[in-house]
Length: 167
Image 1 (cartoon, rainbow, N blue to C red):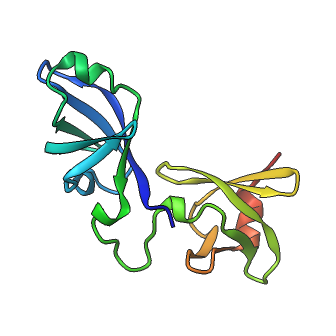
Image 2 (image 1 turned 60 degrees about the horizontal axis):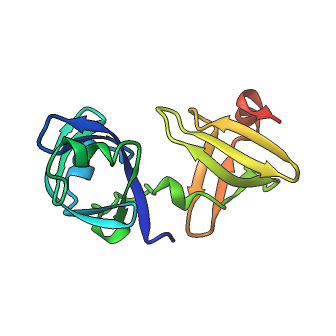
């Protein structure tokens, strides 16, 4: 498992005192706000303050004293150590842990391997099947189960065929 996770992307500076607005990639902006330190471009920053605002957060970092310094962080990924993130509830996982999982039908037929996931209200999965790619949303009824320990995603074949796009 990855030791670090991308938890946000810097959107823009906020005000003149170095505060930044970030788009959080966690389930809740409040999860992001619990962090004490983050990394941007390999540099560790102590989080002075963070306040949630919908699926975003406003963050003050040590070493980012003004708008000019904040502007240099625009569009950069915000990384956190997995161990610093809040404990996940049972039966939940980080999307990065699903990458590389084998996708199978409920009858055990292998469809491919997860190579990309686009986070959204309904996450979009891309699997590789030989030289072809298959894209499908994680809509209701498509995914039966995800076992990150054994690296297997089980899908309902009928529902999968209704929503999958083949390249």
